[in-house]
Image 1 (cartoon, one colour):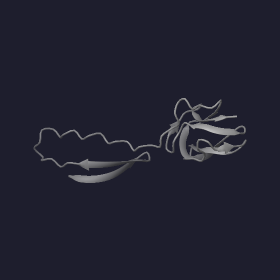
Image 2: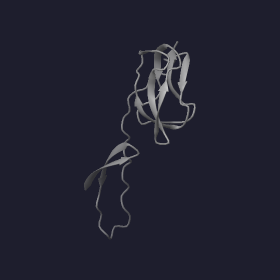
Image 3: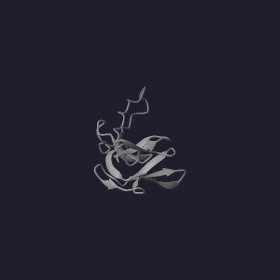
Image 4: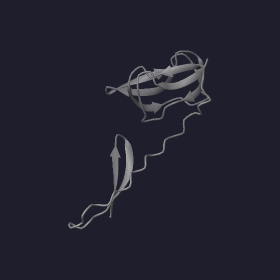
Length: 119
């Protein structure tokens, strides 16, 4: 048995490979790798009255705000990478972060909720 650490799309996997004899009829099925655990997201009931959405599809590379933070118009909530460019996702008004719906590494579509705030 040999162990390898493999990274695919930013997710790290610990893989064990078993060597088999050349005359073996079929190799044994390898267990599926377990996905890395992400930080918990806010509870579904903790939604604010203002949604901050992704303006384009991409990957979240950084979450700068957390639940309970007071933000003002223009405060960066998260950073979205799209087409190899980093785009700041900002609050469009003053308020308090009620929920964060994404984690670092998440892929989002246009219109996906990034966070909600109570204004």
